[in-house]
Picture 1 (cartoon, rainbow, N blue to C red):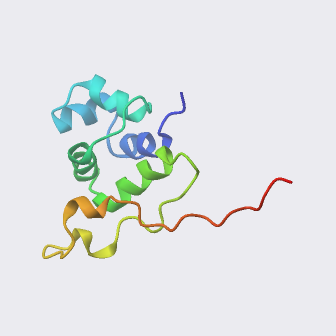
Picture 2 (cartoon, helix red, strand yellow; picture 1 turned 180 degrees about the vertical axis):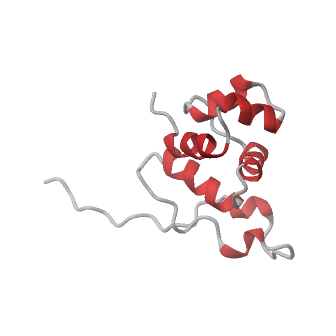
Length: 111
């Protein structure tokens, strides 16, 4: 299974090992390992914790996972809407994670 190399690289740039990072997050090493090896998709709380632990914005970390988990290779440029993470956001949090991109145009028929 393909590993989430970008996250692993960021972890190793700030911590000696994933074990040290897991300890920093107060997680079991296995929990972090399942995320970094691509065996588990991180939930919102885990993504926020990883971002905070790496001194990064949530949006940056979410983009990394979005690129990795995208089934059709989308890069998530339209994700999330800008105002989702403002303190007084008018958009409910659950709306931030709905697909915002328009469906791709048909490639034509295979006649």
